[in-house]
Amino acid sequence: MLTIKNLYKSYGKFLALDNLNLEIKRGEIFGFVGPNGAGKTTTMRIVSGLLKADSGEVYVDGVNAMRDTKALKEKIGYMPDFFGVYDNLKAIEYLEFYASIYKIVGSDARQICLDLLELVNLSDKANTYVDSLSRGMKQRLCLARCLVHNPELLILDEPASGMDPRARYEMKEILKNLKELGKTIIVSSHILPELAEVCSKVGIIDKGRLMVSGTVDEIMYNMNHMTPLKIKVLRDTEKAVKFLKEQPNIDHIKVSDSLITANFNGGEDDTVEMLQKLIKNEIPVLSFGQEAGNLETLFIQITDNEVEKGAK
Ligand SMILES: Nc1ncnc2c1ncn2[C@@H]1O[C@H](COP(=O)(O)OP(=O)(O)OP(=O)(O)O)[C@@H](O)[C@H]1O
Image (cartoon, rainbow, N blue to C red; front, side):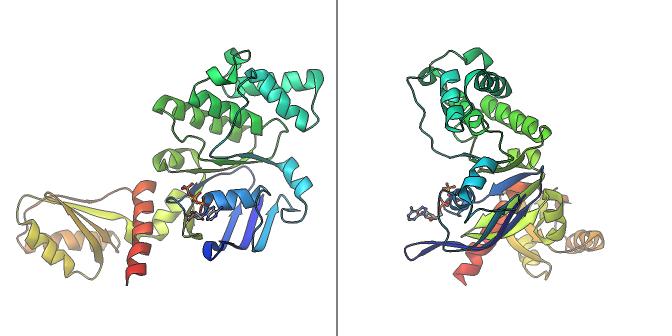
């Protein structure tokens, strides 16, 4: 559904996208994850035809996004991270206004807009002025706005930012419903655990490059050395850390009170061996185990590693 090849974008001398490559299949919800300034918005704006890339190729459902912006706009619904709303309109009028931009008018428009309000749980707000809606409701209305022309690919830039937990939960449920409707969705967020639950795939972007992409499980499997080992000791933390530093398959050791967290590169046999060695060295181990990987730790480690590589 979406193919990005060798994408570059600079702002003056600053390289915001550095040979970005990405492939998203039809029907996927793809989580686009990265720290501030990683290049997520830049990528999304280029894919939506709102920003010109320096070089590279973008195809949306076979449409060359750089060349055929008219066909592109039919296929895409883009929800920016900052959006203006027309405060002197009621929610339904607001949607009908956007429908009219796509030449959808009259009773067709009314029905589409009512259906969309239902999809985003705002049916009871159809006749409420936009300015009296809560932030979360405005965000959902903005999402409905992106759907008026029934696009196949939705590009949502931080749709849950600034929302309270309840509103975030609702947004997540709406994304799941959209997936059921067969939409392909790219969603960027800083709220990583929530993305892990909703997304079929994730891509981690940092400094304009895609660091890794795949399902959370695939990524964790392929990068099992990044699954942190957690060791709690009763005392002698320093002795334990000294011992761990000497082990070739351990790095990134972090200590918080008596809990030691480290990256471990090894299989199950190596894990058993490591525990045996610790005990042999008379280190009073209270608990020992590899944390099940989650997106949050993976993300922090990938971006941490980059910071360290850069510092060398
Ligand atoms: N118009 C612009 N002029 C100059 N630099 C820009 C411009 N837009 C973005 N940048 C820079 O490009 C980099 C990537 O920005 P971008 O907004 O794509 O990141 P992001 O991953 O979406 O970040 P955030 O999560 O903070 O929204 C940042 O360092 C940003 O400061």
